Length: 383
Image (cartoon, rainbow, N blue to C red; front, side, top):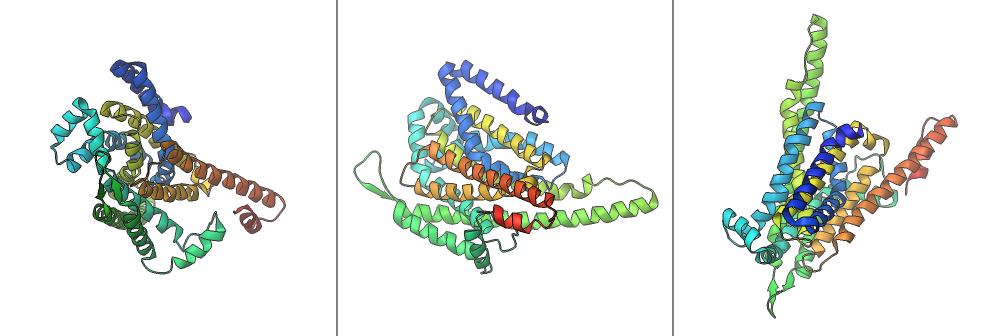
């Protein structure tokens, strides 16, 4: 099962590391390896979130996600996106930006650094909205950190609360962190307007993407109901029916939603990569290898039913997202080591995994004791 799911990831890793050696020797090999680990650690929460969506798709669309989707992820976000950043921020053409990345990497990095406040505000607000909508969800039955989740879930009854909280945090960020010292001069550059506009753009993007996701998830449920009715009708007539065509359109739009979500999660990895190397080829190789493992891990979580067995994993992933969003906003002015950024998410998810293990053991012990309700075990296993 592991080899079947991660086989392509192992193959891409071997090819990518060999290509790095041919491109720049053992130093390039080391850089690509570091970038791969960075991407995996920063995007583990992405895999958990993606798995929650991917499990609604059939095996065909899971394969599409792992094949066509990875091409979009690697070439779109890990190769094209850094070039687009420079092209937009420096008002250059795409070809000119690519030429700059190969022939003048120092200037390329400088332009990307100047664009960082916009990128951090956009990505930070998008990820913050994901966390806030989760923590304010009043319909969620299972709580990990009950002492904070239950009160906040009750507050979730207030309409648009997550949007209001996000806008307040954005205003505080713009007023607190948006004045940056210019790296090549003695003065200061006021980035508050840029941060506000980029942050609002990130919030709007989330609302649009989330709205479309909800719409198409509703369509998927309708298609599944129609599929079930068609199967029942076919059984009565003695005719088989396939559900692939019935659910295909809705699954396609969920696939698009996953791609947009993956793009949003890629911000931190792409930005962090610039702290390690300016060479776009090495960035694409390293981040591409990492992205491949994230995709394989997503499919593995779905097929093994890990999210159903370890119910707090999703909580840990969302807390990691919340932490990452705040880190991105802080990096508008203050540098934060990528090791810290990556380890925060890993630690939170590891803690949620261990809490899930303890919960399962408590439920099993109580079930073995003759009480099948599981209520006491659920309460005792929380934090």
